[in-house]
Structures are given as C-alpha cells and as structure tokens.
Length: 286
Image 1 (tube, one colour):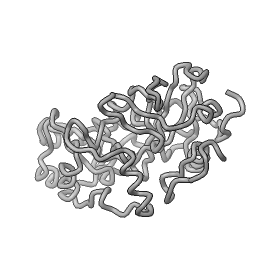
Image 2 (image 1 turned 180 degrees about the vertical axis):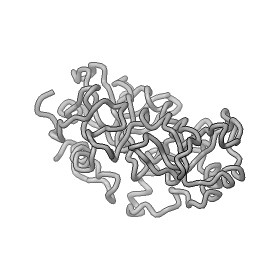
Image 3 (image 1 turned 45 degrees about the vertical axis):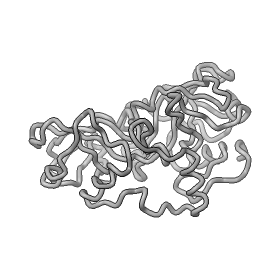
C-alpha cells in the first residue's frame, strides 16, 4: 500500500530471531520468541523455561510469566506464576535471568497445570510473596479520570468465565471484528516491550478485507477490546484510517523502537503507553 501512514518502512530480520532489529540487544520481542526461552540463575545454570505469557486484558501488561522448572530445581511438575519484573533478559545467551531463589519458589509452591490464576485477587498474593507490589496497585501516572475511563472501557473481569488475564497463545489467532460484528481478520502476534513488560502492539492480518491484501498491521493494544463471550476482539479504528495505514510484509517486520511506535500510535489517535494520556485529536491525524 503506497503512501500510507508514513510511520516507517525499515524492516527487521525474521520475527522468530532474538536479533529482532538487526541489533544484538533489541528492546522488543514477539511472544512467540519469548515463549520457550530458557531461564537461568546467576551462575548460568539452566533452571527451566518460559511456558506462557499471561496478558492483562485491560492494560496489555504481562500479568505474569508461566515458568516450568527442570529436574535440577526439584520443584515437581507444577507451573509457577512469576512477575515479569523478576526476569532480566540475557539476549546474548538467548535466556532470561531469574531473580528469585529456590527457597522462595519452594515456599510459593506453584500451581497445577489446569488451574491457572485468572483473577487479580488470585495473583495479588503471589506478587506479595515474591516481594513485589501488584502492578495494578502502583500509580499508573495517568490522570484519575483518564485511568477510570480506560478501565471501564474494557470492563471489570471476574471469575473464570470473565478472566482478567488470557494467555498470549489464546489471544493470538483470535478473530477481529468491527462494531457491526463483521469479521475483519485475526491477531497474528503480540510484540512485547521488554523494559515495560507489556504489549507494544498487536500485529493484525485482514485477509484481503478492505483491500488490505496479505500485509500485517501494527495496532495499539488500546484500540482492541475483548469480547470474551463472542470469542472475538473488537477493533475500534475507522475504516478510512485502516485503508490509509501502512502495513508490512510478514517476513519483514518493522524495526521496533519508541520513535517508530510513537508515530504509529499517533496515527491511530492514541498516546504511546509510556506517556500520560490519550491524544484527543481525530484518529488518523499525524
């Protein structure tokens, strides 16, 4: 699509590579790249691996990382819900350093593979036991009114029929619809900001709808609203804005950095998540 939003056409290497942006130390990685990543201690010993990323549906934050541990740790076959803050990427080693001792993990005890924490109340105790304040209790930096509107837009989730969190694997592949209920496409991937521990953007495919061809499109998380009972995700972006947006080839992803993200967010009418509040100008304005 020529012209377009103009938020950059530089491309990276393959999405599955750790060297996402032709650099040794990328700031963003796809969930598909992070999942399966090995977890090590400070001595470099292999402790286990990342099984899944659980995404907070309201904020796009990583609610927790699901870890499994090797026989070396002698923690059984349970999974462990670990705050993102306890993991430090060691990208040259294709690994993540875990900042939690075995003794603390043994005390926490983990959870059965069929009984994942899906509500904030369940997860709050886990954060506290690891010495971290739950991220949703930490001041967001957003004005109170703006924060209330953001939380209300998605709705309050409670219980297993209406979870606060879903796995990245569940979100990927979900169909995307517009307000009329028309099937637009699906979510192909989620790109994670390693520093902030949240979804930087969702990569959507539209399957030829709107004449958008086979390209992928980077969409801010805030533009997506979960419709759990419909097993769908609502995309709240006008058709004319999508038609003028600049997509990218599935084998050549954008070099993701905050300059590029800022332009992309602004095009769709959203303030970047690392800033305070949503742009009030019409979506599509640069």
